[in-house]
Length: 147
Image 1: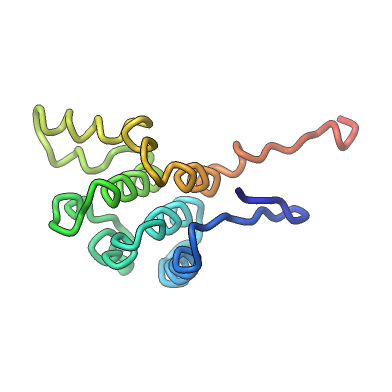
Image 2 (image 1 turned 90 degrees about the vertical axis):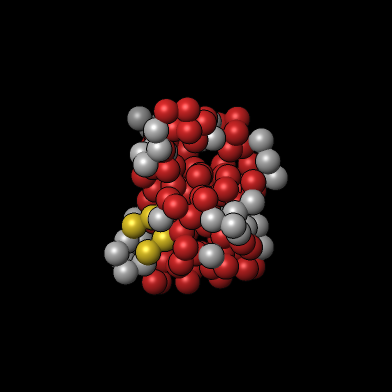
C-alpha cells in the first residue's frame, strides 16, 4: 500500500513497467490532475492496456475512446481496467452513452463495484481510487494540532 513520507504519499505500483508507464503517460498528457493520474494509473496496471493506450486515450485531444471496449484485443481483465479508468476519469460509465436498450443496461452493470473489483486487480483499483480521491482517503487528524 502507499505510505506517507512527511506530507507526501507514495503510490504503490504493480511492477516497474506499471510505474514507468504512469510517469510517461503523465509527461505526455495535457494535465496532471487527479483525473489524469487515476486514468494513467489504471491503464498502466495491465500489459494489454499499456500496449494499446493509443486505442484507449487520445493524448492530443485529451479524450477517452470508449469504442476500444469492443475491439479484438480486449480481454475480461483489460476491460475491467479500462472501465475502472473511464469511471475514475469521467465520474461515470461513458461507454453506455452510445448504446440503447438491453445493451445499455448490460454495459452499465459492468461498472458495478462487484463486477470491477472481483478480479486480480482489486488491490490496484483501490490504489487508483486513492490516487483519484486523496482528500477523502487520507484525512488529516486535527487532534494532532490540538483542534
